[in-house]
Amino acid sequence: MLVQGDIVINRPIDEVFDFVADERNEPKYNPQMTLAEMVTQGPIGVGSKFHSVMTGIRAADMTIEFTEFDRPRRLGSTTHISNMDINGTLLFEPQGQNTKMKWLWNIEPRGFLKLLGPIVRRMGERQELGAPHLAKSCGNCYDGPAIVMVSGGSAQSINGPAAWPWSTAGL
Image (tube, rainbow, N blue to C red):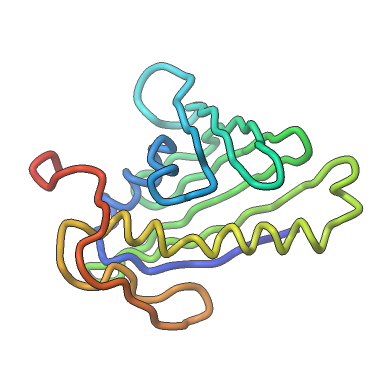
């Protein structure tokens, strides 16, 4: 089952890609992720693996492996959880000074969850409603709105500085 959406973030494409590609940043914008650590050595790229823990009804251990890494345009991954696999693609596209990020997640539930397909799909869609937190995390370098548009074309903005995880001096 496919879960998809997009968001426009008021940051340059390179910055958004690099922030998202470092899976260790996800707990900064995804309140359901309590742990994200890189378990492979070397620079982030194809083959990089991360161990993450999500909260919810019960904690879920995940292994995320990058299957595509075309900086700054495309990031593919496979996520293994005990009760499902998720094959995903993130697509990044410049829009002026902003970046449009689109996600496509193919969720393959196993066991009992396979019987609950529509519920699993809705859970995936609800999880992606947290995308504004990503835009907020990417916005601290300036005082304008962090979000221009979220999936479906509804205009939204988060005003003021957000929790950009590093200083502009390091960019």
